[in-house]
Amino acid sequence: MAGRGHKDIFAADIAWGQGTSPGIRYARFLLDEDNAATSPMVILSTFEPGEVVDPHTHGCNYFEYIIAGSQMVGKTNFVAGDVRWASGGTGYGPIRVGPEGCTVLIVFQEAAKSNTIPLGKARNQPAAAQA
Image: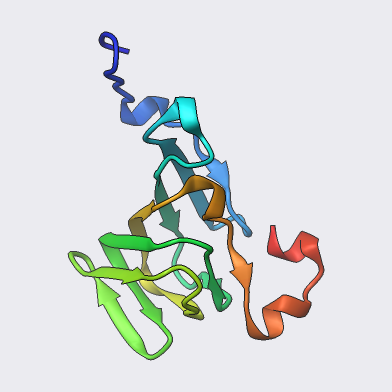
């Protein structure tokens, strides 16, 4: 922390969480920690080569920037430098990570509405498989 209202987090200090499989990691950052439910949330996420994320949606608007690697979302391939965004409730996927893996920066309009909502066959999976 470098003073009131300013926060620095160095790469070595990022708190990584485990995604739905061992090949997915994420770090979450709230832009307004005093209002966690309504705050925008930024997620930095890494995916190992070949990871697949089932079709899903979110309850709020979503913005994603591909930092490195590639991912096929449905039938469209996205590479480093590309941007995707979707309105809340818009479904997409599956996401298939390319052979070099993928690192993305995601921004959700509201942290409380950012949870993944499975679509299609994924809706019928047990809750543990979706976590």
